[in-house]
Image 1 (spheres, one colour):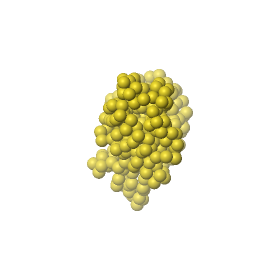
Image 2: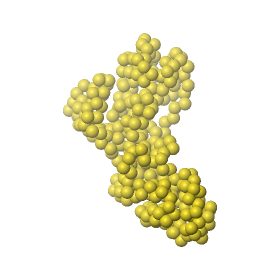
Image 3: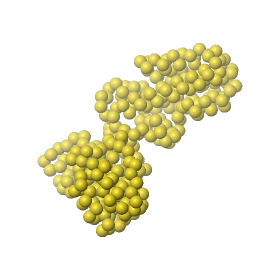
Image 4: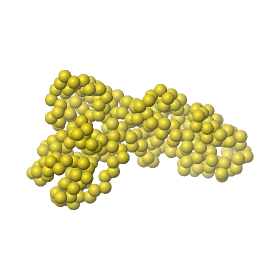
Amino acid sequence: MQLIETITNELTDVNLSLTSPLLKTKLLASRIGNQKLLIWVTNELNGYKDKADLPDYRKTTGEIVGDYVNGMNVINNHVLPIPSFDNSFDDELRAFELFDGIEPLEQMAVLYKENLLKQFTQGQVAVFQKLLINHANTFENFSLISAGVRVPVNTVKRVLNAVRNQLLDFMIALETEFGVEVQIETLQFNKQKITTIMNTTINTNGDGNLINTGAGANITYSATINKGNQDALKKSLLENEVSESDANELLSVIDAETPVSSTEFGPKVSQWVYKMIGKAMDNSWKIGVSAAGGVLGKLICQYYGIG
């Protein structure tokens, strides 16, 4: 079928917009009566309305940043030390989804040079301010003006590449299965086989392939600490570039209290964690802010035997 060959040729030219091959794919889906393909390509062209329908390649996590006043200083677009020790909650808090259609995404990829920002509501901003004031000593005269989740503009390019590559894989699979000169009647007769091909080449409903783009995204955690083993805990802290004095400070208080729950430590340990997050924020501890909370949380949870 000439239409499949045309779509394939357009997809392999990275200088061409995705709009044309997607429109032709929409025509193909209509002609062969494949509703699943038609829904996917329509969503990609027009944008997604429901979060439940959003494929995982359009989801990512980023850094929480804000504009704030601290004393006499006005700070803009700065990473905020808001850690979480529950992975699912942390991902939800830092979630960044791209619902836009292909044409707006292509425009974003050209117009934006560094980052994209999803603004939080004023109600959420107020919660973040209270959290920072209550748990970090460095925020006595702190007023949070605005906050949001920031991701690099390359996130958009990854989405565009995912759509291009998946659609190309689908077209190549059709050619391989039915040949270049396949007739429309053959495709109509093999609806179930085409749906199977689509299920293996195009991600329409998410399969856990979350894009990780936050600060410290390249930091991995592989340490194993036996419950109550202070030597192992200190070794792991030092390996993550925590200073020896800071590590010793944690060791001096960690056995003096028990965790409140599996996701909340005692007040002294929590205060130490927030102090370390503050150090990550002002770069005196060379680790990404979003990675800092995760690393410390996992190490302490293992020490307490709750991780």
